[in-house]
Image 1 (cartoon, rainbow, N blue to C red):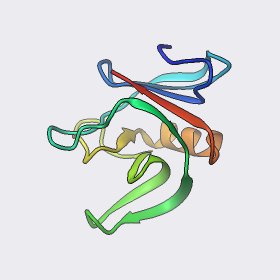
Image 2 (cartoon, helix red, strand yellow):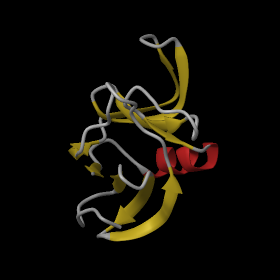
Image 3 (cartoon, rainbow, N blue to C red):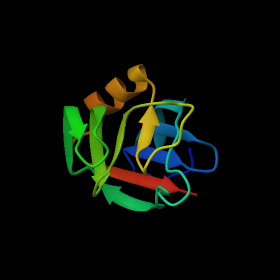
Length: 114
């Protein structure tokens, strides 16, 4: 897992993989993800979970975002297509989205690496 020991969630953009972690050790994953399309790239950096909503609806894109865990403004981990790119969010399978939703809490560190 390529993230710091402080990360509770880790996303590696170049490999399209994400993990849950504790103390620098992976506790779940890697799982496949898709993320931001050109012009809507998911930015690297270290962020904190701000809020969660299991039934979030994006008014910007008029689309469901099940099991959303927001960590960078409007960017979230959520259930979504693993074949199509997003508007910056991190798409997970249903099972992975539920697992991330259940594991992560507001204030948890999310690290996104290139």
